[in-house]
Image 1 (cartoon, helix red, strand yellow):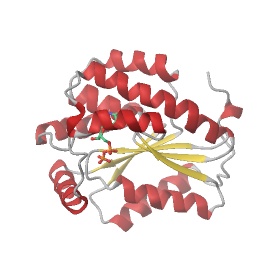
Image 2: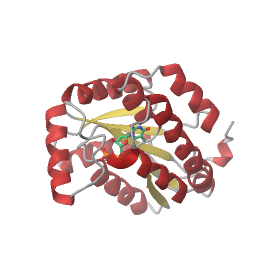
Image 3: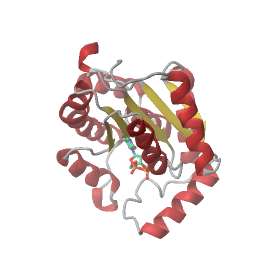
Amino acid sequence: MTQANERRGLFITVEGGDGAGKTTQIKKIAEYFEGKNIPTLTTREPGGTPEAEKIRDLLVKRDGGNWTPEAETLLFFTARHMHVETVIKPALAKGVTVICDRFTDSTRAYQCYGHGLNREFVEQTNRLAINGFSPHLTLILDLPVELGVKRSMQHNAQTQSTEDRFESLDLSFHEKLRQGFLDIAKKNKDRCYVIDASKDMDSVTSDILDVFDKRLGGVDGRNG
Ligand code: TYD
């Protein structure tokens, strides 16, 4: 079990379906904490360490092959174990606030709600791989599926992204994901905040900062 004094920094995760604008909002969140002179690290999953980035390539690029949901989950948690042990925990112990683009809630949403994997498989792997290590606070960027897919396609066209394996899935899959994230939020009210990501970028940022001001008012990066 992680001791409180090993988690002096805050661990914040940002979740949501494709096209929710996570990347932009994560930059704004980092600026908010840096503005309060709190050292900040932004990172992502799958990835965040050289080893985990290799696993990311297997999972998100088209030439990664077709994994079963179980195998996929084991790979996500292999990457997550490296990320937690070698990057996230050491940063938190130094009082750094860690902002992570996706974490275990994505496995729950994509692999369980999306692909129908047994939830207990994910929860058991979660315990085994990272001892259930969980964020202090999770932002779930929520928006209607059609809008998310539209934004995501525009983004891919602009960046010529090759990471389109997940984003090519159909609308009903994205609807399951959305409902999955909302259900996760309902079951974890103390940790999860649903943000309406259909608004314009600045309004979404302002709604996120409101959550921090309410929830973390007076935060100095050393509580946890
Ligand atoms: P990411 O690049 O963050 O996607 P996005 O472009 O939506 O920000 O993540 C790559 C994909 O991996 C994304 O479609 C979600 C998926 N994923 C899972 O299926 N399970 C997981 O545990 C994680 C972390 C990601």
